[in-house]
Image (tube, rainbow, N blue to C red):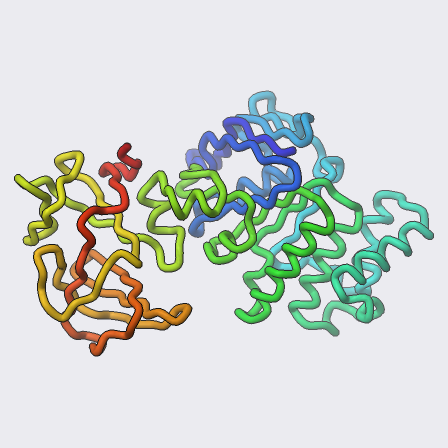
Length: 352
């Protein structure tokens, strides 16, 4: 359904998106996940036709809609796609019904068909009782539903979402995530969703593209990313809590971190060891494989306790069954398992 080929976008000397290639199956829910400034919104704007690629192609259903190498692009209105903005972008002088009707009028849909379609999408999003109200008369969550209704009314094959839940409170975000997944199933459209919130990504997506510095670090299912991170960035960005990555130096029969000798043999003279949070243990006493740190945070997560400790620039998190009898600021020993889950080189790439 959606194919991206060596896509690049430059702004003067800055490459916002660098050589991105993806193939997304029909009906997928793709999440572009990454920190602010990683290029995910620029990529979405190219999919929507609001930015022309500097190089590479975008293909919808076998039809090229943007070609940066030839410097041309299909008009956004002719791509059979719909974009939901972060800011809702509703017409303030139009009622809810008028906002939803507007793209149907532009498409020259007959009046009777328009009325039936408006009623259908308003009921689908459970806002039919708000049809005659204006945007300033409804809540932020309701405005977001109106923006989504307006986008899906013309039945686009591809739905594009630019951080649509970031303006909502935490409880409403959870509710709207459920509604968006229900909507995705109901429309059968292929969806592309931009967020920096990895919880949103991992709960909603069928496929995730983790981006950093304009590049896709890894593309796969949420399970793939959690089980098998291919870069240290993915390892520390994905997961609740994320994985722990420790820089180590080979030292005789093991490796060294700071002044501590750890009895684990690394594959390279200098590399990064990854440990999952639920594999670490918290101890009040030092052991041969523990690191002495300062306790900085404890919180409950799904009936277990998340313990975070700090030593210099190194921050480690463990998930344990019972809350330790410790206070913030106490010395704590973070005990490592016999072997790391995997290794990365100093550039952050997975070592086989």
